[in-house]
Length: 244
Image (cartoon, rainbow, N blue to C red; front, side, top):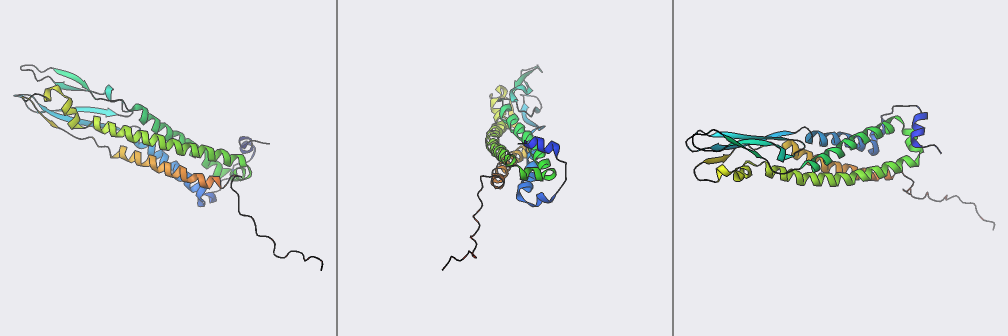
């Protein structure tokens, strides 16, 4: 018996967009789009948080801390004035926390989901006859889709928790409370600019939307497998009449 890969190699590519009218291919197209949104809104992000510090007898100074993906915050430094009389020296402080594992795991799942969607869309639209003729293709597709649904659940939950920790660690109020120069009554400190994280909030939403899409698509793929039993056809009403 030829494998699916061998059948694809030996049969010609024939583009047919009609499967997009069916849930199987249409949902896979949505998965392809939303997987791009998921990893694109997370990877490449950069933000800035700040605190205003006014040493005694000097003008107020805005202290900025920059951070970016993959959110190893303890590697992002910022300079804080020592607030010593007749000195302009600064100390180097660092943001707290390392949330790279959850962010990179989320992006990794998004990238692999995008690649798998690309491959299966080529199969659906270019080799639909191979997919329909081989029960093995549908079974493998079902198993991989179910696995991705589970991975979206895990990665989205982990990244949602990681994003909450990133927001806390980059909150100007939290940073201000950790600065030694702000703990004395002589110097004046106030929270500065809050980092814009709408893009990261959207990434979490896209992650859970992918969970719904991949989980729901399992049913439509299951219908293509031999495990799905179609209702029995009604018996022929015109049966032969037995001898009297």
